[in-house]
Amino acid sequence: MDNKQKSRMTSAVSGALTGYISFSLGRIITNSIYIFFISMIIMVATLFVNANFIAKKKFRLKTDKDMIMFIISWFLVWTIFFNISLYS
Image (tube, rainbow, N blue to C red; front, side):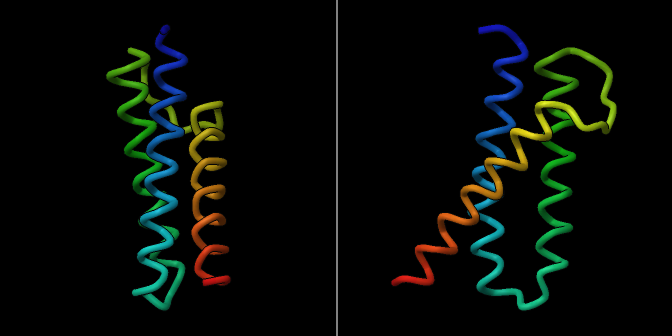
């Protein structure tokens, strides 16, 4: 597996974990802007780790495939848990 695939897989897994964390915190914290900022901090930290340790390149905060994988998996997992909580 090359570095790009490892980087995208790390982004997808951390996005899924962030989706679950967002859902769990959403049941405790009523103001959702705090949850959004916590999730953005996790996203920037994940992109930093991907850039410096996995892909071995300079960290730049720009929209790339790692960020898109993170956001898609975050939203997908959050939506799944939100819908499960609505119907149970």
